[in-house]
Image (cartoon, rainbow, N blue to C red):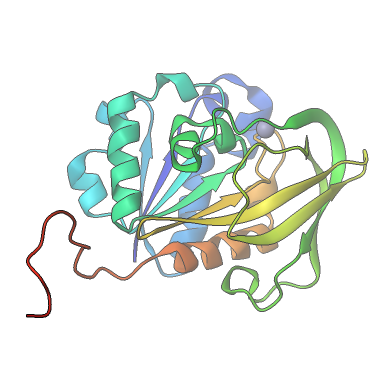
Length: 236
Ligand code: ZN
């Protein structure tokens, strides 16, 4: 399986706290544990030509991870449309944390904003496993506890997920649908909430396990494409 980890790679260049947690960027941290799990991984960032997501790269990508936050608007529509087309054709996608407001996730969801409530107050987060036995939760216990995370709260303006895999509770009182799967055309999508840039969430072994499992879950084996348009009768 070939994975491309995309990151806007902005906070890590300008914020010392974030730089200390992810010195080579969030994408490199994610790429390393996916690689250690046996996947073939490349990375791409916003400042690469065509955001690093050329047709050649996408031809060679089974699963695309996406982390973005402050520069969603800088991703050209042409790149967004190209990625969306690939998802409909079967490319898997894992959308991380503030990627809820990315152009690509909005386009795939059909919701304008992925709106939600938020607060940066270092709340504790407990991610409860809702679907035990689901491929994404393989190897996990009942929950994952993150001592400090950014808080997200309902309502989360997304379509009803095909499967709700995790629900988060925050010590400030909010709850949130933190692990949602969707199918668009032949492609599977997994949205996973944790991963704020100023806390070391992607260094947590259980979070890594979720993302390693998710890559496998959203990967659709390549097969013949569906045919659309006029056809002669199938039965004479
Ligand atoms: Zn955040």
